[in-house]
Length: 224
Image (tube, rainbow, N blue to C red; front, side):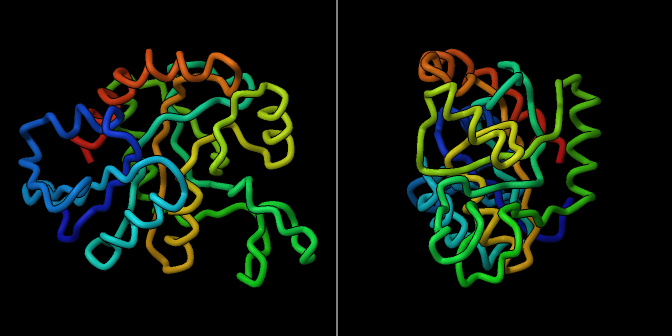
């Protein structure tokens, strides 16, 4: 058992359904969207969609945890297949555009960032998740996630963003939490399940696949 709390952030309750339904955690509700498992030393926050909500959730738990894992669904940006599970340690805030201030796309001005890529993982956690997925026969890959407050439903836009930032997945939360964790030196990674491609079928595909993703997330978290 860990001696310190693990922070878990999930944007949407449907994505957290299997974890919240498991009696093994003995969840105690602390506030709207926030739960604590004394048995597993996990603080879970179901934060809502978007970068601001993810940052707020992280702020609520930050002084009580030593590490953060985000679980959630993502869109694929290119050749990624629905049903694939991605372990992500690199993130880009694709809607951070301040080039007129002399910085590259994805770089926050006056922040000290020298690259658009945000990365501060715990190698041991990455290895542990990879081992769990092998044991559970879950189809795990690695990739870079692009995050922004923009739901991508255009194939052309998705391809342009992928080419610009070297990404494979898109979501609306990960980079915001990763940026804060990197700045304050708390490890962060994300496990994302591809429920759709960033095209005109995105909404329907997400609704059909989120239940599968919730089961995957519970199987991984149960073994961490």
